[in-house]
Amino acid sequence: MITIKVRQNGPYRFEGDDVTVVDWNGQPYEIVKLPIALCRCGASKTKPFCDGTHSKAGFEAAEAAVPGSEDKPATQF
Ligand code: FES
Image (cartoon, rainbow, N blue to C red; front, side):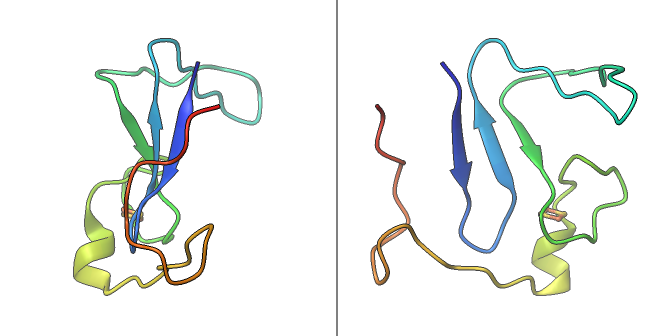
């Protein structure tokens, strides 16, 4: 099972043992280590992966599934 965590003011973090990221041609990116984080701020120099630039860029996206809730692990189904 894969859990995708939307990080507060940060990337999408994919947690799971079997994650594959492919480009538009279906070619897989090399995954060096897990978990992986995919950029959602648009500022990463290593897209589609997050390189931490969101912090320097001041990216803000704190929407939660339940408005007003704290940053905590997503519910597992
Ligand atoms: S979300 Fe981390 S660099 Fe974009």
